[in-house]
Length: 111
Length: 113
Image (tube, rainbow over all chains, first blue to last red; front, side):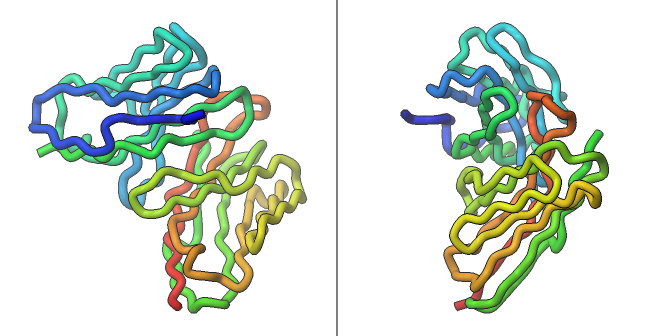
């Protein structure tokens, strides 16, 4: 089992460009989420999904879109990148109230 | 919303020394998770505590949950350079909630050889 995979590992964008961060899981977990990690601020929840076709906003959703068409995939879209979105992004999955598992992260730099 | 405060923010210890990291919640704790992160990598799950007074150990790391104080502590005995990294606590805000975890800002641990 690959667990939680994220692509790409690194990305550099120019302000205004769009991109999609990919997240896939093979654990058949119903809950998936996206976090961003910034120095001194821990992990902040961007968006999450409780199952295919259902998504909801987290703590810092502005500037990001998500969709969940399958159980396995939960892509995060940046429509118009801004320097404030420079961060490390983590995808996570969870089954019910069990342990939350994290992907390896995507480092994003917006110039 | 629930807030988790970790202390200290950073810690430098000599190899072989014991250390403690604390995580205090602004609201009732229903589930407390400890993760470790090495620089540039993802989060590795360490332990989960769900009941007041619960204590769990793995190798030289022990975590405790004090439900009354809304606090958890992570204790490392005889620290080694392999223990270095960022330790994060995360918590469920509501009993039985399957929503995502709220996290503290992390404790950066450096262990000097």
